[in-house]
Image 1 (tube, rainbow, N blue to C red):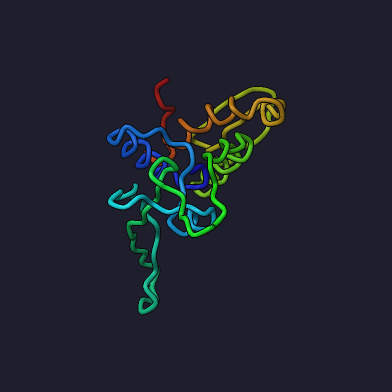
Image 2 (spheres, one colour):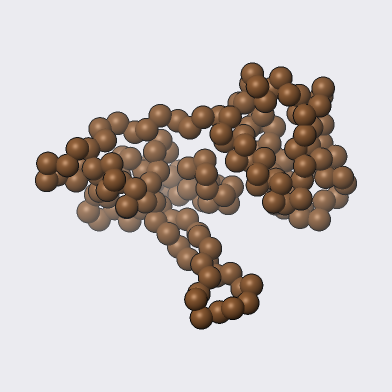
Length: 164
């Protein structure tokens, strides 16, 4: 889940809340098949959006299509003697997630840089985080980057500092 866009992560969290699901391990139908599982019959799954460029269009128009994902609890062993995953996968590495958030901020024009203090300058746009946090406390880095990414998504041209 941590490799999905923030928009899709929020969409999954909202849908899971409506279905009273705890999100542990999210995969596509093909992803579950590789793990010896399949979506349970009649379970619609969770929807995310993915970009799609029709082959007959040569301009920069990007369309979006709904794609389904299923949480571990929405799946069952595939059967047929196939080796199956019996438990949800462990949570992702927070350092990997922090890097994923940094890459999303980079695509939005923000530079995330090491410094002695944590700071945000939306006019520049630069986010500084102590290098020791990157190395020793990636959870704190994730907690700092998520609201800044949300702010950057809502204010693509920069501007004033968001309220705390």
